[in-house]
Amino acid sequence: MQVTCNDRDPIFEDGTLAEWAALEAHAATCPLCAEEVRAWKSLSVAAGELRDYSDSPSFWPRIERALAEEAARNPRRAERQGWFSFLPSLSPAWPAALAGALVLILTLSAAWIYLRRPVDGRGTEDQSLLKSKALKEVESAETAYQRSIDKLAAEAKPQLESPATPLLADYHEKLLVLDSAIAELRAQAGMNPSNAQLRYQLLAMYEEKQHALEEVLETKR
Amino acid sequence: MGTMGLALPWKARISSMPRERGTRVEPSEHFAGGPRPALGEASSEDAALAAACRSGDLRAYDRLYTLHGARMKNLARNVLGNPSDAEDAVQETFLKVQRSIASFRGQSSFVTWTYRILINTCYDARRSRLRKKEVANDDSQETPRPEPRAPGAHPSLRMALERALAKLTQHQRDVFLLYEVEGFRHAEIAGMLEMTETASKNTLFQAKKNLRLMLEPPRDSAAETR
Image (tube, rainbow over all chains, first blue to last red; front, side, top):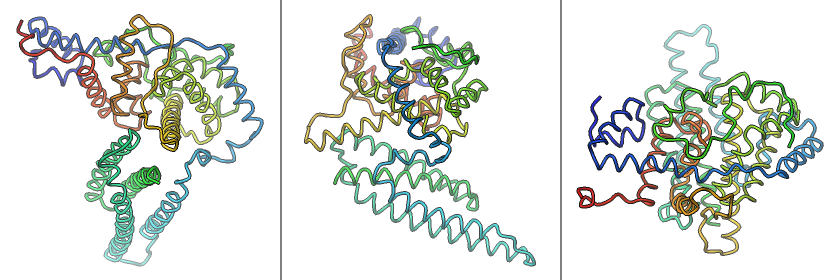
């Protein structure tokens, strides 16, 4: 396998063993690549300096005590709570987000049930008509929800565009990732509009975005 | 801490023991590929550990700590910047695992799930620390505050790396720490940080590119041709 200097970065990013071997062979005759490969590898070696696995003897007993106390306090808590067990760790902004999400989920569920209900005695054309109607309802609910989130985004925009703190910069980054994921899902949903799974994924992304925006606005307050 | 005898062959399947210093060199995925199984694989051993934790058996948590406690604490220390906050985060993670184990459905491996909780707990701790600082009108930036730790072979290199890491984005820093320091694979990191494997690879590449520029700027062309 022959590689050139231009292949170096792609190999650094995701090179196979064979590609790395070829790069090393190339580096033997190319001082620039030799230096880059050395520097790249030295970062991995330097990372070892951040490894400190020294044990602290009092740490496990402390955790064990906390676990035992928790177990004694709430003997059947885990079973009772089921998958709502994350609720105690929610921030105060969540109830609003959760309420909004529930409304949307109910709307989507109703639309989905309506779309899927048996339609005995109706012809194919009628069924397709019902599906389209239900789909329209879903899409209009989705559009309304998206519009609300856009309003939130507009409110948070000044803070995000020139983030005053690293936390806001983190949020900005997260929102960019979410926007790109939403755009991708919307494109997929556009190609396959009746796929409920895509709609649910899209809803989850919107919820996450709403939550992130609320937290940004909360830091402002 | 006792090493309780849950007679399960976890050691053989889950990468539990932290690696030696500086053993990972590129291309790490391929070099590390053979002997070390992926955390993301829903192995029966992993499921057994999850089941034991679900049953409320404290020995299972002891086992989890024996296998992963040191690495969890090291990761938390590198994210949060000091051992005290790191211990709090690890303890909180164990409590969260205990509280929400009933909700664990096995979509990812139990260990990956645990690390995801740890990472989110560290994020929460950082946010709450930042909020407290903002309330107190403290102008200091939210960057990890390195505190003394066991001496390494190159303390100055470690400090330079810590300073450079603090300048990376959160994602870049986390992927670098998980991959290069803790030795997780991209598939595992993808599960922990809820991103794709490709995104994890790309983020690591960007992180290392930035670190390389900060720690060791490339020589100019004149120097290269020397």
